Length: 468
Ligand SMILES: *[C@@H]1O[C@H](CO)[C@@H](O)[C@H](O)[C@H]1NC(C)=O
Ligand SMILES: *[C@@H]1O[C@H](CO)[C@@H](O)[C@H](O)[C@H]1NC(C)=O
Ligand SMILES: *[C@@H]1O[C@H](CO)[C@@H](O)[C@H](O)[C@H]1NC(C)=O
Ligand SMILES: *[C@@H]1O[C@H](CO)[C@@H](O)[C@H](O)[C@H]1NC(C)=O
Ligand SMILES: *[C@@H]1O[C@H](CO)[C@@H](O)[C@H](O)[C@H]1NC(C)=O
Ligand SMILES: *[C@@H]1O[C@H](CO)[C@@H](O)[C@H](O)[C@H]1NC(C)=O
Ligand SMILES: *[C@@H]1O[C@H](CO)[C@@H](O)[C@H](O)[C@H]1NC(C)=O
Ligand SMILES: *[C@@H]1O[C@H](CO)[C@@H](O)[C@H](O)[C@H]1NC(C)=O
Ligand SMILES: *[C@@H]1O[C@H](CO)[C@@H](O)[C@H](O)[C@H]1NC(C)=O
Image 1 (tube, rainbow, N blue to C red):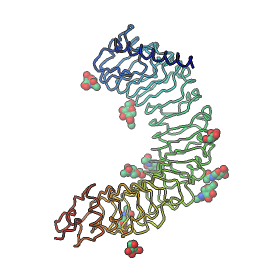
Image 2 (image 1 turned 90 degrees about the horizontal axis):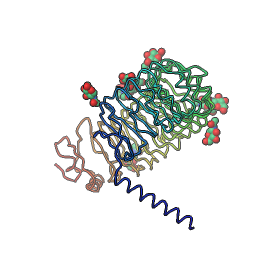
Image 3 (image 1 turned 60 degrees about the horizontal axis):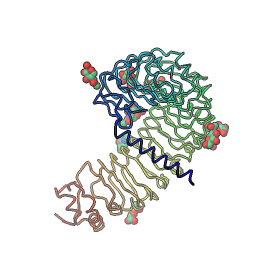
Image 4 (image 1 turned 135 degrees about the horizontal axis):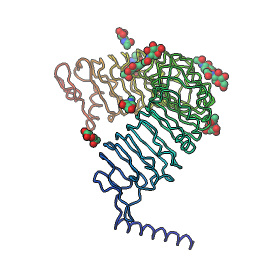
């Protein structure tokens, strides 16, 4: 008890001392006005690194960020000591002195450089003994110094080398045997050797290979055992059956996220073995059919926008954890009753070919909050179409072919946010149905509809019960 009290007292005293010190002095290591030193050093628009101020009254900062500017060179002794994070974004940096990071050699954990003009990996990195995260983006690196790579590899857990001109698989990746996440997106790798992951196979949990020119699903994936997220977007897979390599891999039961958007797929493979899969991205492909029994029941989000589907895939009805379903930009003409699971919260059907919303299209969707039906040639919405949508917050019906205000609106909560336009004016037969007038008056507090009847009357006045 006494120990506890003295300890607390010490803490209070310490806080007191820190406050006093801050009140007297703490100054920024750079006097330049474009640098702020609140909890970290953050500079915008530097033309070069300002002179470094040292001394007892200079604050100790651990984060340093130089955002967009014109720095071309990081000279010796230009950075404050003891940094744990350095981020250099959008500066035409073409040289970094070999000893530039020496004063943070034993502290630096995160190094990020984006949109620089470096053509070789900075050898200054070699001295960093604690480097955990290395992120290089949009930099045309031609020379990858293997001595530097070997030196830093053992401690690095998160490595992202995006759009850095790698045109073949970097064999030195095998030295990074503590990697948890690896992102090589935006490099024209084109192919990945079968043994590429041999020394990483147990550690890597997140692998991103977006836009890497792949035409085959890498066989090398089947050596990975701990993967939970795999991103293969923006490639061009010519053989759909190769996708089943993913379902047959050692990590199949642990994968939670899989992205195969924009990858030239003409069909969906059998993915039922991915029994932990929560999110799958299949947008921007040419999928016309998803065979029943292909999708795992664990899914919570399914992205199938911009494909060639003519109906809602049969499996969808059985995905009873699914909350988010994206089916926009397809060719869906009709929706069978009970096509959707009652777990749905977000349903996007815009740019399809729906003409009728029936009493049964959206039955049981009592959790649905967002329903997007824009740009469908919908001319009929049956009166009970929205009767189960008790949670609906947003209904979008932009550019439909409706000719009257549907009676079904009277079943919507007054708070539902409604967006509606049609390709031709509403006919507004008078008097307006009593249910619609009552519904509209209950909405008055929330919002009005700013549209016109073909007679020129405002919908607002028509739904307020006035005839003209
Ligand atoms: C960098 O320098 C060039 C030429 O001196 C100038 O046009 C440009 O505005 C500068 N950019 C920034 C972000 O300061
Ligand atoms: C890739 O990086 C280069 C600079 O090396 C840049 O000009 C280009 O815009 C980047 N590409 C993408 C897709 O960001
Ligand atoms: C899969 O996940 C479970 C629990 O999340 C874990 O115990 C198991 O080791 C993982 N399997 C692999 C192959 O990583
Ligand atoms: C994908 O590959 C196919 C077959 O090799 C080719 O015809 C097509 O143009 C490629 N598509 C893209 C977007 O590169
Ligand atoms: C699913 O996994 C089993 C073994 O667990 C395997 O025999 C089967 O081929 C796999 N099916 C698919 C479609 O990957
Ligand atoms: C739809 O997907 C195709 C590839 O299949 C792509 O070229 C196109 O840009 C996508 N359209 C939209 C609106 O995303
Ligand atoms: C998919 O694979 C599972 C397990 O291997 C199997 O039970 C199921 O019938 C397959 N589905 C299809 C559509 O082939
Ligand atoms: C939508 O349906 C109309 C009429 O049936 C048809 O002419 C049109 O081609 C269809 N559009 C698509 C994208 O399937
Ligand atoms: C839809 O439901 C309404 C109200 O319950 C009913 O009057 C109408 O006949 C139904 N329409 C069809 C096509 O079943």
